[in-house]
Length: 235
Image 1 (cartoon, rainbow, N blue to C red):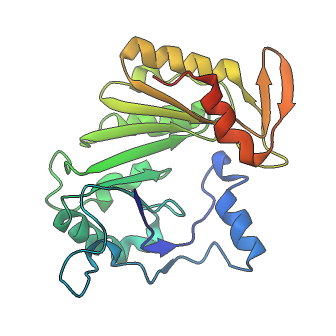
Image 2: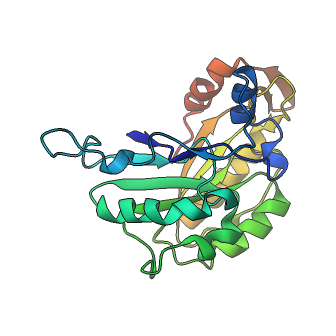
């Protein structure tokens, strides 16, 4: 596994961004998250050692722009170079998540066709309104590997009509002192929809405020992923 952040900075885009951990972390460090800038790791996938070998080892999953959005408007002048590197490194598999799926077709390279074999796109949704808007678009796009990311999930949603062609659905709660609660019943409902559609499902993390069988719990951030794993409901 490798991380590649060719730029940093992002702007809140919808309800799911309300308690964004990137904004919180930047604020503590005195950084303006709304300023989108290229990083010194821009060329990381094609950086080479003195021997001529790539520094980023072949065969890895590369998590792309996990501290920003790959489709953010401010990065339009830089994205084509990223596509060129992704094409060159077809021995790596690149994964990016986006809340800006409506921009996808204007952001892809000319040779995209029905998608690159080594790219997975995850469309992020947080409530029913965003699920219906974004996933309706997502379902029509030419992408070979599709994931749906329901995180942070802030209300009960139905996504069964959008699961055709999706490889994985991830569900997780919100992490913040003031976070909106995650009800375990919502998680199980999405899981049942994935079972019916024969789609892989992963419960990634609980929410800071978690409801199970009507009882409310407050969890430490460090325990959110481990508690979700203990549920043992991934398929």
